[in-house]
Amino acid sequence: MFNFFRLVHNENIKIYARVRTWIMLGVLGLVGLLMPVLFGYVSEDIGVWSAMNTLLQFWFLPTVFTIAVAADTVAGEFSRGTIKLLLIRPWSRIKILLSKYIAVALFMLALYALLVGLGLGMSVLLFGHSSGTTDILGQLSGSLSDYFWWSLLYRLVDCLIYVTMAFMFSSVFRSNSLSVALTIILLFMGGLITLLVNPAKYELGRYLLFANMDLSQYISDETGSYGVSSLGFSLSVLAAYYVSFLILTFWVFRKRDVAA
Amino acid sequence: MEIISDKMPVPGSKSKMTGDPVVRFDNVVKRIGRKTIIEGLTLDVPPGQVFGFLGPNGSGKTTTIRMMTGLMAPSSGDIVIDGRSITRDFEQAISQVGAIVENPEMYSYLSGYRNLKQYARMRSDVTKERIDEVVQFTGLDRRIHDKVSTYSLGMRQRLGVAQAILHRPKLLILDEPTNGLDPQGIRELRDYLRELTRKEGTTVFVSSHLLSEMELMCDTVAIIQAGKLIDVRELHGEADIHATLETIFDVGERIEEALALLGGGEIRSGQLVVRTNREGIAEINNLFVQAGIAVYGIRALTRTLEDQFLEMTGGGGIV
Image (cartoon, rainbow over all chains, first blue to last red; front, side, top):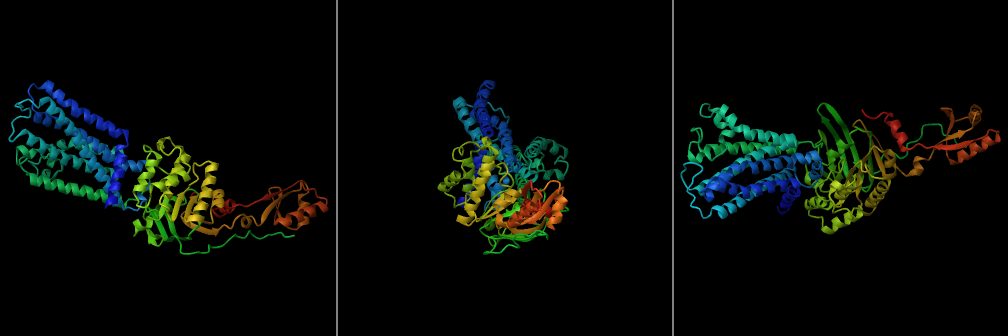
């Protein structure tokens, strides 16, 4: 088992040895540092947690960055041809793919930790003294800090789904650009698709992946955005999609003839 | 005087076995779509040899190597490496294998050394000392900490060899290993492969379409064409290959007269060609001189493996 972590270590090296990764980290670091400053200018009396909730609107940044890395981790090895030298080691393909998936998931956590860590540090520094009465998110029940942590958790769930999707496309299509494009199209089209197959009107719509994402819809209303669902139901649907994505990913990768 | 008129004998016959085969192809078939790439390949690779796998472009060499390394699954049949099936017992079988499949593609954004470390981490038996030893050995020591993106093709090829031998495999598979190497590098590789088989008992499986190269490198050569095994032959060294020579005698205008005098040989594209041995050449020369036929030149028309190969594969090739 110890040796398996050396595979994950290898994958981490392949992620962090690249300039691209450090540009992503730099951009995210700047957003975490500068956005609270901007919030301070825009709003006179903003509290730490209001600032953090606003900062979380930038969730798409770490998500898109992780999607790019996830898409590259399998497809990139195919396009560079390095997959051959990787697969002729005494490791099953399942373990090699799993090490890649774990490295990508760790990268996702690192990006969110960077954004939230720097953002929180700056917010405390800038607004720590403020009473924080201004509620820029509108009326809410519960404390703003609770709201933030739950939103963050739900964003991480969403991100993991998108990243798993990108990982699946990467394994199935072996094309970096196609995987990124498809995932990001779905990321931004999801809302529109749900609008067309409105879960409030059509039973089928309730089973759509996108109708069940953004679990923060259940914070303000227990029946969700469309008033026909519940947190438990959405979690089950997400789990079903997640598991099917992973099964397809691993099955295709294990069976595939490598002719890169 | 001995003039040999029948077809040139085939040097060596089927390979003699010494010990259990390191690789055993058991009726391996590979179909991709409706096209059959490999048609029932059955072949044993004896241990401790440099074994050549020779065939024109598109004959299925790389496909065979992909199947040997588990990158592709055979449609039917099996490949057994060191007694273990590559399809059913992949991890055990592949642990005895080091390989370069096609071009040695590396992570260009990492240094050569960090590339080797990647592969070292995937095994428990590669020490830091071993990495250094392999780096020394492949002559990369001065550039090993540079990024691979700055390497020439020859240096990448060397790095490819380095990753393949890192874990002292019993079976080393090299796909067109001389690609991109300069004559000096080819020579070094050849000497190295010899050393590996002799000192460590490694079996080397080399594919190539460069016939002259294979003649110098291999103990045994299997010839494949259009996915079918045509022949397996041992190469006993140059003496056997060139035991009988086709020799051209340049006798100027009196060629018909010379042919009649000789009572053998043939006229091929205006030249007198005689198949004989070393002593025969001297005797024929003497005969001509005594008959007053001036001999302006004698030269050997050696038939290399290449000629035999082209003859066998019909000179054409890509099917």
